[in-house]
Length: 149
Image 1 (cartoon, helix red, strand yellow):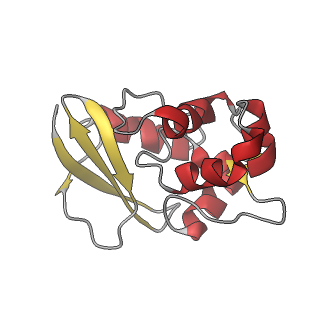
Image 2: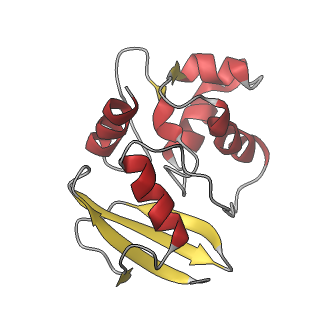
């Protein structure tokens, strides 16, 4: 399926995972309690299959995506893929790793606004004193970190 909004329920996350696709690219990922898109089964939408493989202990999700942001925000989101599976960095460490040490607040804001979490794994960037925010429910971030932990 090339375009549309599709979902499947995740027992691990205890909520739906909803994926928006446009011309085969992921343009949105969300975790609604009540989804709007079309419910699909395994094998019908490759990116959802990749997400559920990851949630079962598989590798990070490798799927084509399309972002509508530029500049620092785009660099921040794309560089989340450089944080290894099972690792975390604080916002400050991550900002420093991408050469934006003076812009840690903007880095955090970009991560919180990530339109394609899991595909661009912003959950691996955390506050110094804990999980902090996420581009989805905080409980989802905790569960993803525990999964990789």
